[in-house]
Every structure is written in structure tokens, then in C-alpha cells.
Image (cartoon, rainbow, N blue to C red; front, side, top):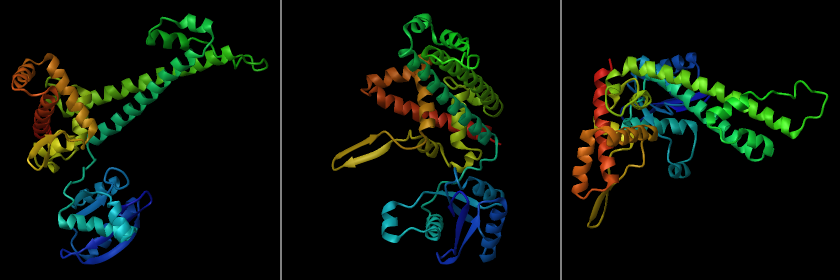
Length: 340
């Protein structure tokens, strides 16, 4: 399937690779049912390749999985191939089907219908609120740089919390004196007041999202929270990376590759070495990095391992990479064990 916002284009191939049909359907619940009925009329549908299972094709993937069809994530066609072979929605749909038939598309889609998807929604809300709050804080400090000297001196030396409270107490005089001409000082105080109230609202949203994420982690991943260096946010990040159907990941090595902590082989002539994996889910990679840094500070077992590898001539970078790989293996087996 070649997925878009309003329509999806589907192509059906036989087991020998012959194109049995190509059709376009609306991206609606009725359209999904019509698509599967049409494909089922051409034969038994066992596997489906869908572009964008995490975006435009997410709802379609969930529907197909609920109907017993094995869904695989298909990458967008390479631009070089498009230049040589052309670009059209039916052609993209056929290429997606051929990727599944040939075995090139091996990543199974997430179901997105359980607590992990709920956690993804809350984490998205928290992330956008944190970004907006940081922007508002920077704007307050930027306004103070060019503010009246008397106002700067009034707010000088205050920490962030005290500064926001003081700005929130500034009265909005523009509403009371609509007939009078507003001064720059009044506009500055009003701006600081509005930004401070915005920060307060965003802080409440962040705390609410954190409370919901903590409750989800305690309910669905209590064994992760028992490990050293793993808090609710890190546990939720690991769950989101694995999805509601972690059985789609065959081993801890596949999870490590998904997190970008598996070593990548490099060789040129007689020189052979391994380099860090720059791909994968970077949020999951950052979560594993936080686990390792916390354990290096307070976990005796990790500290003992670090000292032993240092004596062997390893660099800190190499040791951290190995520790992240071990952490990925530990998290993978625990999540697999607690999933229903």
C-alpha cells in the first residue's frame, strides 16, 4: 500500500510476483473494509507491505492486523530508482508489495492498540509542552535584556521560580487604560506577565503528563522500574520503542539495532574495526545512555566493569557502547517477560 492523507493505493501480487490488480481507496474506515474485501476477492491475503505505518498508514495497519493480516513496514523508494523507473502511486504500491514478497521488508508493524500507544500520546504531549515552556522561558529572559533599567534591577538576582512568580504578579494595565497611550514599560510588564502565566500553565500540563506516564509505567512495566538507573520516563521510552507487540522483535540483537547500540562492522583491506551505530531510534538510544551514566555514578557492579575494561586499554567511549548494549539486552528480556 502507498499511503497518503486522504487516499491509499493498493496493489496485489501473486506468490510468483504477477500484478493481479491495483486500486485506490479512501483513507476511511469504510475504505479500509473495501480495500480488504477487494484484495480478498483476488485471493487469500496473508501479508501486506504498508508505507508509513507510523503516520498516514497507522490506522490502516491497525485494521489489517486486527483482521489477521501480517503487516510489514516498507521504506519509501530510493530517489535513484524513482529517477530511473518513474514515480506514481500504483508503482509505489507495487514496489511495496514486491519488497514484502522478496523479503527485503522484514520489519513488522507495531499494533498501536494498547497501553504503549497510550503512553506514546502522553509522551508526545509532554514533549511539546516542555519545548513550548523552554521557548517561553527564553523569551522572558530575552525581553529582560532590553527592558527598562529600573525593571531589570527590580528582577535582578531572582532565580527562575521567583522570577516567574514576580512577572506573573505584574498587572495588565493595557485593559484599564484603553484611552491612554500605552508606554513601552507597560507593554514590557504585560508581556512578562503573559509569558509567566503561559509557563505556569505549561508546567501544570507537564506535571499532569508525567503523572499519567508514571502510572502507566508502574502498571505495565514494574520490573523495569526495579532496575538501577531506570525511571518512569526511561521505562516508557523503552516500551514505546518495542511497541504493544514486542514479539515482532526476534531477539535482543534486533532490539539493540533498533535502538542504535549495535556495533557496525567496518573493514578496508587489512584494517578491520567496529564503529558506533548512528541509526536507530535516537530517543531510545538516549534513554539507554541515561541508564548507563546513572549506573556509572551509583552502581558498584557497573563501576567494577568500567575499571576492569579501562585496565584492558579500552576507552570510555567503547565501554559506554558495551554497557548500552548490555542495558538493551536487559530491558528487552524484561519487557518480553511482562508483556501478555
